[in-house]
Length: 448
Image (tube, rainbow, N blue to C red):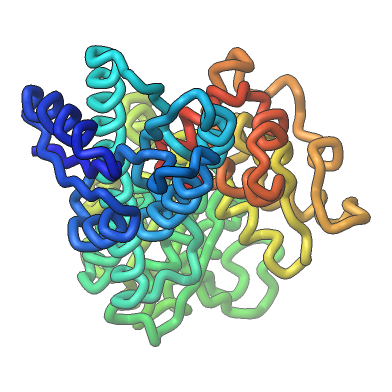
């Protein structure tokens, strides 16, 4: 049952409000002095709303007592909604407190229907905010627990999608099965591979990385499996050790695996099946024990249908698939990543710059974000990076109406801090009306 605290020195008002709320199955607590009301709030953290008078001394009509009580209530519970009971003489003070964070003010006498509607809306909003804060707290605890249990290679993230991916990555890391990491270019697939390797049973062994897409086709097999002297034109008289041999007892990361040639696919399949391979130009079979992690931005299933990728190899590589979503699908990660890239530069992001970052589609994903931050840090003369220096391409911005932009909790908090808590200034910075900003602050439970 919802619970409301009433603080008023008039017993008749307390009785009337208590009766009204009880008819709507809302439990009430009451106090006739500010001190008693504050004590009740400390003892009842489940109170969802406070209704308070503005004056408690017979010869006082200034509203100063109500002002002091309001701020004392917010010190105990910063996010609790407060309705002010006012007479016309305290209206100016009530308006000031609404700007400072009070939920609403109600004149005496009040309209029962309007008051009940207001109370129910505020209680529902408070419950939603509490649930959201609890969810955010649980998510934060889950992130911290994962960081304490595993080596996450200093990865920066906040999104639940990456949290789920990392939980799976660390779970399978200790097994010896092949892992396939899929996702668009620049999304951070190599970082996920690093995390799998760092938590594997062979983390102390060699860790060899190969960008298959960067290897010339005629040299690909020699790079992966090695070559005898004179096995191919330009090889000279030296024996070439392949990456599989170099990774023996450790991990081999094959990036852009979809670029592997047909003959290379056959040899890779054999290594995965038996641990055996032959150097180019040699009939001697060599045996290695290597944990293979591969990555691709290609649609391997489509390549199988086209006949350019072996289905049996796909099944060998895809024992465990880790799907990394593009940055545009995990916008919660944008600002933490941007700040991480600026951490050693001493530069900061202005509110408009943060808004610009959040509105951009990031076709190049994390790699593009890193490049943009590095460039902006170099070009910015002061301490704060502005939107002009950011210089994001106009034609790849998200095509959404201006009013549909939804600022994140981080952006709201940062903007408020930069504006010293001045709502009007923060609203201008965010391109919102003050009423729209108030709604969003209430939505996230941000004190103002």
